[in-house]
Image (cartoon, rainbow, N blue to C red; front, side):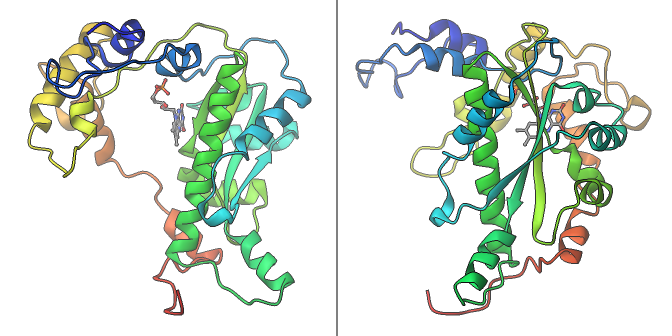
Length: 292
Ligand SMILES: Cc1cc2nc3c(=O)[nH]c(=O)nc-3n(C[C@H](O)[C@H](O)[C@H](O)COP(=O)(O)O)c2cc1C
């Protein structure tokens, strides 16, 4: 069946993409042609930005959009730190010389999980509560991530480019100090923001067969799905001779996305994050049993 998103879906998945669940069996029905969705299907991260300034009013509008994201229990446990002070930004950027966009992006925001505010609100109303268990941490993380992605989509809708920055957590002690974060407030990710200097490219995604499960989880077709994906992705953007740590892993005859991500994931990230959280008010335990 042809549909309005053929080109965008091919760009995103590298294959002719059927919208029908069972082609030929189940009628697909009408699919509305929505320009915003085309843009969303071909969205991309940008790490290089032009000189065009991003006015504060625009940033505030994007932040308003970000905080329009849904929020677990309406607890509203996301916060943002808008890093305007140049000296402080430079100190932060100096921690990550491999990612110069942290320092060069016209705007830099840090999306924070904020488990502190709910505790303070409880105190204001005379309800003592400890929000440092895993549930409090998790809910604040999800809220911050939703706000982050809502900000990304709003920015992209207005022609801006963005790059989330979770590498902050790899140097959490130094980052926490530079940002002067109080207990129970932690960075989920930074966000670079600016007008893109280049058009960028669509990063191909795994096919829905690998990531969508109907009625029950079934990953029996994973290997075939990943093999096919590796080949399609390689045909578009080959990693080529940029193999990761060949001195450690050897040189692969065919080096696709899955080999690259397997190698990448072997090296742990976020070392020290749990320790830092526990030193800053979180137990990350089960919550105390109580009335539900
Ligand atoms: C939570 C999160 C953290 C990320 N952290 C970084 C980062 O620290 N540095 C970076 O350059 N890109 C970072 N990215 C961008 C991803 O590398 C990018 O989204 C991914 O390669 C897919 O590309 P696309 O967004 O263009 O589809 C992050 C993305 C997300 C969602």
